[in-house]
Image 1 (tube, one colour):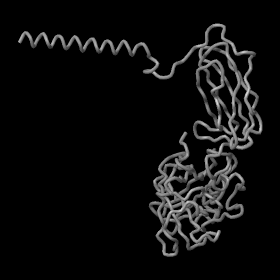
Image 2 (cartoon, helix red, strand yellow):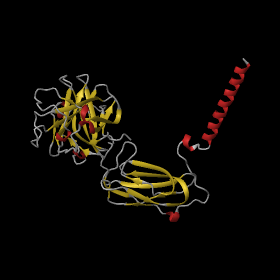
Image 3 (cartoon, rainbow, N blue to C red):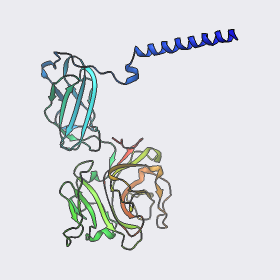
Image 4 (cartoon, rainbow, N blue to C red):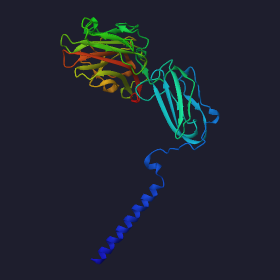
Length: 362
């Protein structure tokens, strides 16, 4: 019994020694436990020659390169660099160094809004523990970052208004065609577009445009399922997408959808393929779709892998029933009512095909 007691005490002592040793060892490198190391500016900290520049600073083409920043500091310090565009887009960088040589901006953004063509961007530089704040001259974007193959050039070339179409786009002919009682099928432009649901009623609901993720225009469909068939209306276009791969597992279709949180609102993405390779998508060729309930309020990104698209079960579509992204040549956006008979609406913006992974959710 005494021997067992002595052994227990010995093992307890060894355990305590190991525990204390590990604890002391970890305390020598706290930065590995608590996150990145920060460095305050010392008294007398300064920016060399107060210089802070960006290259290039005008006619920036993010499809060809990145923006570099030049500024040197009197010591190693934690810096904060924030870029803000007139579009409402922004992106931030935080680092530790004696200059900005590690910062390369590829045109990406944080949050919902994208940097756009003709964006005027202001760069602001500040430091931990210092009151010094430097601002650059405005940077001008000629071509924004490309995330993939855009559909309809993000609707920016479209004219704002009900049923105003550029070449190759069309409506699906439904209950939104009347343009009455809040029915609408066309481009909304922020901040000027709005609809009075019932112009004869001074207390009628007003549907105002909202700021879209990219640019100032987005597509908006609204209407009532008067014949209780779940379908309200839609729009689409025949587009030369020229997707680079035929692997349906490596292509994603992404779009931002604006919802109002109503249980009846439902949307559908449609794609039709040129199965016979004629160069023109014919009505009888394969159609694929993806349905989604719009249960959220505000803008939300949805992404669907091409291989997860379903074939439309209609006898008129007599294609080869093979998902072939390279043959995708027609896209559509449909508004549905679920349950049937309701008044529904939704907006969508920045439809884009990406390769390998979905569009980043910032």
